[in-house]
Length: 134
Image (cartoon, rainbow, N blue to C red; front, side, top):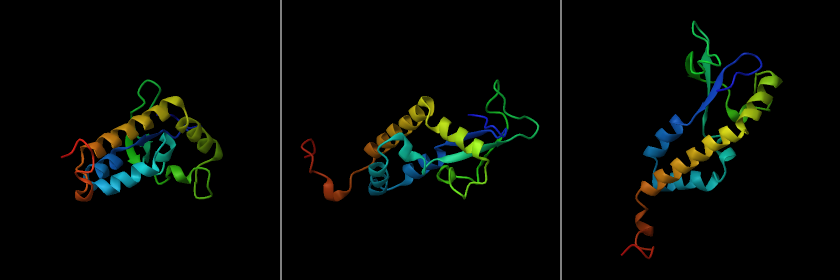
């Protein structure tokens, strides 16, 4: 979780995406995965989280300190006139999102979504079409 130049502490979360994917029908999750072939394709599907400083602000030693809340800014807002954040914060967030560590985390998220899809029952119209299904 980085600290942006303004002092804002942010993170990303796939929790709501996973909750949706667990409940989604096979076709809906398939469509999402067809459109999400690379880690960056998940930017519109994951949440941007901010941490309220309160009495226990996050720090380098305790990065998860503070109360997390869903940001009013979405990742798709970054770089657009809709983003109220300073330019330096936006650039820092984009740099972090494209870091190897964050991209690796997003790749793991894609793999988890693919595993969720594999565990779902195929629609009746396609059952029996694979050679291993009789």
